[in-house]
Image (cartoon, rainbow, N blue to C red; front, side):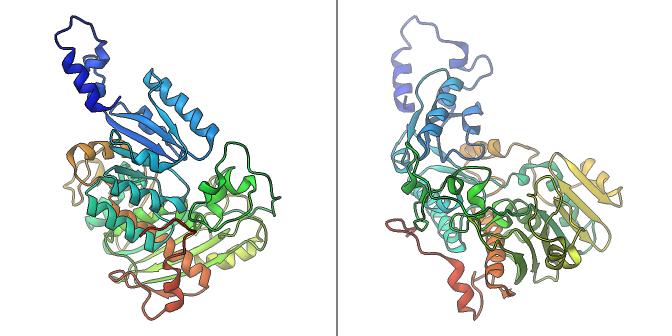
Length: 448
């Protein structure tokens, strides 16, 4: 039911001696439907159901190109809401055309993020977009322009910004408690290798052409679209784990360093790519960023970590790629200064050297960086929809963090160091690299 229709009926029923459930009126602590934010999930990927589970939102639509998945999602949402109001769609444009939907949660593959986000902004929908924000740097700039032009509230799925340990590490860095920041170390997951796959018929109920969307046409094989993180390792849809997952840590590094609205001036990377098979993004890699203030940020994939895939590459070759960072990076974010260090990871883990530094952030020292204390990234977005303030991970910051992953991928692809102008967002005097700031989209799709 549209909110306007709900209010009209509620007004007409005032004079009638009827009884409504307490939850409908919000008397039992529940949020009444009239106060819930009506939303939709577009792409039923990671954590799409958070909008159905949150008491302050009401999911009216689910959209996915796989019929079985969207029908399952509709059943889940209907079960949560105790009705059959949720509608299932194949085409996201039909969702955005509904004037009773105010917000969308985007969890499509990466190559679709920009198109859906721009269309949602133009339709006036507030946006929660899973990470990384876009597939290319040019797409990121276009999303920033659309979000700000249309005044919608945008939250990026880099939820470390809403977690205490990362906020505490940021406070230690930005408050000067570590002395002069010299180096940031990041640990990423490794990539994967997959042997050549057979061409298969497209399953019934799967709109494969729509799944490909702006990406180049390719024959269908199930591991292209389905399976554990399958498309993460195919460059037509994602630049690999350095951005698909690594954007979490790149974002935290930017945040602690205080470079949310700018970026590095140079990027150097090395990578080992698969030599055959379906996957073509790096299996193992190292990336080094140089910032104007002299600080460096180094990220490597962490061998042997539970998040990493089993390597098919000889250890000696991996050691060669990692160089002096081999075996020194834990899966997380470490800030190293002239007077101490701080390591942050999920679940509230904060390790400091010296240990006494932890007491600074545990005992309410004056904060140099605002933090509202909530660990719920989705709820932060919901709250900001009501206030119209920027959430913890607004669109400009999302773009800058995603850019770091794309810079690394371009350097890996070209196999050389690159200079970067973070103000103009170009590679100075480097036409070869600048051509990789964007990729052509398959007709009829375009971000313009």
